[in-house]
Structure formats: structure tokens, C-alpha cells
Image: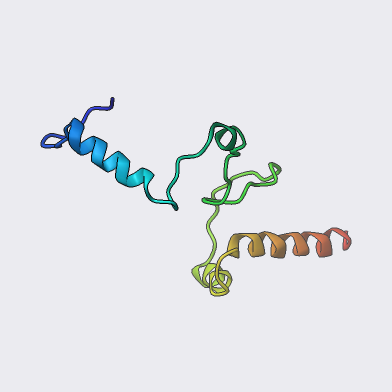
Length: 96
């Protein structure tokens, strides 16, 4: 059992039994079966999306107005900036 905060009050056996009985009587909150537990898969819904694995993290400094222009369109501004740099690279590699 993890260390409890000072002042934590635990239910006695009678209270614990009443809490458990109330929980089990709720049809919308039934415990999962062993089969259901075995079929669980990790969820990937929070946090950043999985990356491609091909990007490199760097630290750069840009003019504030450039960053604000990309941020103005909302989430995904870094990907849009990456796309703009990629477009520039494609356009200028052919000019050599």
C-alpha cells in the first residue's frame, strides 16, 4: 500500500463493505471480467502524436513576427513551418 498523506481516514470493514456493495449494485460500473482485462490494449490519445522518427530536434531563433504568423493559424504551426522550409528547399535545390 502506498504511503498515505497525514490525516487520511480509511473506512473500517463495515464501511468498506457498504461502499463495495453500493459500487457492485450500479449496473453502469461493473468490474471487468478476466476476458475483458486480457483484451485491453494501451490507448494512445493523449499527448503529442507519435512522430515519424525521422525528425531531429534543434534550437533556432526566428524573428517574432514570423513565428506569430505561423502560430496565428493554430495548432500544427511547427509542422506548417517545416513544410514551408521544405518547399523553399525544393524550389532552391533545382536552381543550382
